Length: 190
Image (cartoon, one colour):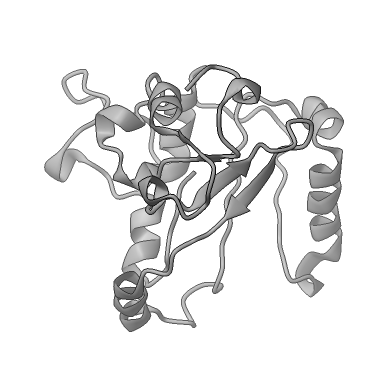
């Protein structure tokens, strides 16, 4: 595949499923390259090479490429989570959007519709279907994405255990996603 999708020979790009990536492939310094190398150019959405893909980019009109979502239902995950789910514990749906290295001013300039939607949710208060929060000061643990994401996901800064950033076993804290899974939620990270 070439660097520019406008030069690709195919009508669609079939994006890989990152849940199949190992820790090394998911690393922030490698994931872009791995996704790029595993993306397939195809002419038919039923191409057998893309049978596991769930997200496609329609590039037939290169001035307006469109995403196509074909999320596959995982019955075993549904059964497992349904048995654990307690509707009294939390809201049925939770969407966490984490935007890194974007100031409030830049967000309002670059994402006006999104920011307007967030503001509308805040203005509705308890009467709304959704709830959003805005932090009015600079919120950062350190100047690197991985440190800030770790704080969000684990509620802790990186552990200082023998200089390792990825502790294992008992040293490894449980993430917020793990907590949700234990309570019957179906989780996804993009």
